[in-house]
Image (cartoon, rainbow, N blue to C red; front, side, top):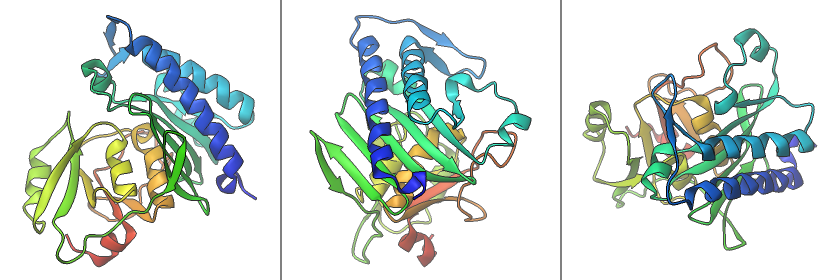
Length: 267
């Protein structure tokens, strides 16, 4: 049995992500916290670093021989990363802007990448008390109040108004133009990787991200989406997103949807 088919490992990684969420909440519940600006103009808080440390410690105990790439340890050079066939890809706090706004729409993201594919993923939203987990041949699940429910990505029926998820913090003219090509639709606003998770659980049909993201932003939710019967594809080539195939960790513009909707070529 491969790691991607190991439900016990998936649940162990969920425990690691929940511990990271607890570390985030210790900062979130303070009256105030410092915000630094990194070299790429993205914000950084003590919560990002506390979550990173909790995840690194947890994964080192679970799988000491598997390397880890984190947003907060992104100085690993390409020649080193090129040698990795299997590795953990993590975003300790995805949606730092949402964290700073205190709207709760931020997540802990942990993904296992194998041969460029996201094969196991955990997404935890600590304020919302929600987690999404999934893996190859394991299915995808949403966990709330300790209850695990199987989820599936859905294509809209002919009579449906399409639910299209978009960002609270990012919107672009490219997305506006894309939306003009769709049938009747309504927008659903959400922060962080939760946008992809909404597609995975069938609450949204489509997520077009026609703006820059990094690989650690998407990998965990991408794994959940694939386990739920969906996919994330390059917006131009319509080929599935792959990880660690190039020096840059930036994703191309992409579209997330059920495999059924993508195969219908309806947009």
